[in-house]
Amino acid sequence: MLEWLTANLGTILISAGLLVVVILIIRYLLRQKKAGKSSCGAGCAHCAMHGQCHSQSCKH
Image (cartoon, rainbow, N blue to C red; front, top):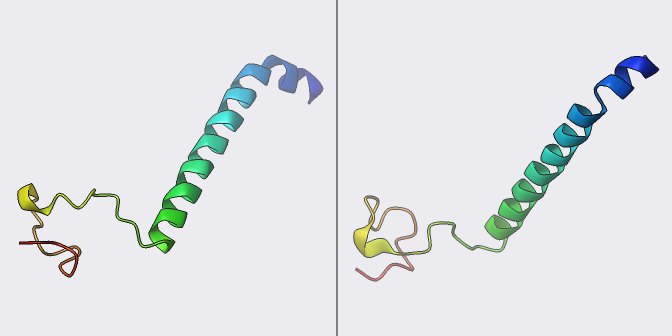
C-alpha cells in the first residue's frame, strides 16, 4: 500500500488540489446565490432570456 502511494503521490496531490479548487468555486457560487447576486451580470438588453430570469430588476 505504501509503495502504491509513493508511486502515485504526484497524481494524488494534483487531484486533491483540483478537488479543493472545485469545492471553493462551488462554495463561492452558493454564497453569491444566497446573497441574491446573479451570475449573469444583469445585461438584460442583449440577453436571449430578456426579462425572464429577474424581471423585477431588469429595465426594459
